[in-house]
Structures are given as structure tokens and as C-alpha cells.
Amino acid sequence: MCGGRVHSIQTLGTVDGPGVRFVVFMQGCRLRCGYCHNPDTWAETEGTVYMPEALAEKATRYKAYFGEKGGITVSGGEPLLQADFVQKLFKACHQRGIHTCLDTAGSILNGDVEVLLKCTDHVLLDIKFTEDALYRRYAGCSMETPLAFLQLLQKMQIPTTIRQVIVPGLNDTPENIAALSAIVQKYPCIEKTELLPFKKLCIVKYDAMGVPFPFQAYETPSSADMRRLEKMLNT
Image (cartoon, rainbow, N blue to C red; front, side, top):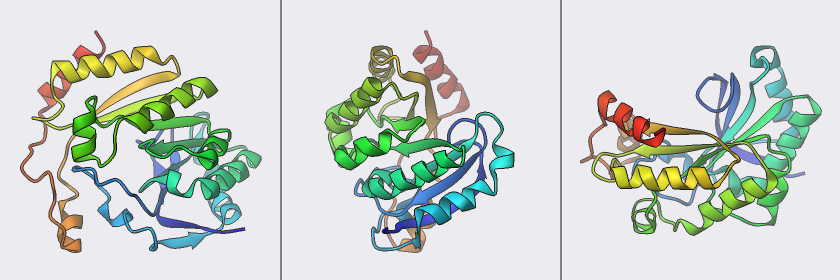
């Protein structure tokens, strides 16, 4: 059985899915999102190698903190790059009575991913933009695969949370919110939609890597602007 490359682990996360989560950040990502907070996860050959059973056992130590809604979340990087490992990890977690959640951009869709989803209880899906041109320019992929991934989630009836980072000057428009709302209304598997403010805390990572931060020129949206967009989304 092959291991998976893990960047880091957060034992008691509260913003990575329902309830309190044991969060595993996988190593490796082929997207280059302009606002990426974890550029140190890009390299696919780095990280610490774990076996799925050992990682599931590690998560089990924190089961008392999960409550009724908590569990394990696998994030990244992009966990779909190591879908076979994550599937084995989730299967081992289910054997221990642990709820599983996948945090992904949905930019990879193949047989291994479909098998993984059969062991996935909840998905956090990033819908980065609602225009294909913005997706291609600022994420490095088209909208086609994430939307196909969402269609599969609907077919498999997997509870889903949609997330979108709001960047002033790019997607903080009524048109984008209307388009996002139309996507949400189309797929009943979507239980929740979260708008997240763009932040620059990750700049220190880019500086340490000697890599320019692509979104240096963009500002963080105000709390008032975020409330305005959330009101539009929920109207």
C-alpha cells in the first residue's frame, strides 16, 4: 500500500467543514490561483509520507472533540491529486466512525476521484469565479471540470458547501453574485454557500519562497462590502 504526501496537519480546525475537524493538508497542486494561501503546498514531491491507516489512527485520537458534526477534512494543496490515498484514508476513517470531508477545487475528474467520492460524506468546493476567462487567467484551468465535478456531487447526492473568495475588482460584482446564485440554485446538493474575503496574510510565505505574490495590488474587501454581497446572494 502506497503512502500519501502530507504538507501539514491541524488537529482541531473549526473553519474546514462541519463541526470540529482534524484537518490534513495534502502536498501538491497544479493550479496557480492568484490568491493562493498555501504556495508551500504546490510541489508534489515534498511533504511527509503517511500511510492511510496510521493517519486515520492519528485522527481517532481526537474523536472525543468532534461531537456530532465533526470529523476529518482533507484539504491541500489539491487532495484530488492523491485521490487513491485519500480514498483509503477515508475508508479507514469510516471504519472508525469518523465523518469525512473533502476540501477541493474540483479541477480533476477521473476514476480514482469517483471512487473517493463514494467514501466522502461532505465536500467543500471552491467555485473561484463564474466567468471562464477569469478562471483560466487567475486559476489556471477552465470552469468546465469544476462544474462537471459539481454535477457528479449532485448525482451522488453528496452534501456540499460552495466557497468563493471575494477579490475587489475581480468578482465583487452583482453580476458575479447573480451567476453564483444561479449555480447554487441548480444543484440541490448544495447546503451552504460561503463568501470569503480576500486576505494577504500569505505574503510571508511567498516572500520566504522568493516568489512574487500575484494579487499584491488587490485590496481586502471591507466588512460592509462582504455583508452587501452576502445579502445579494441570499435574496
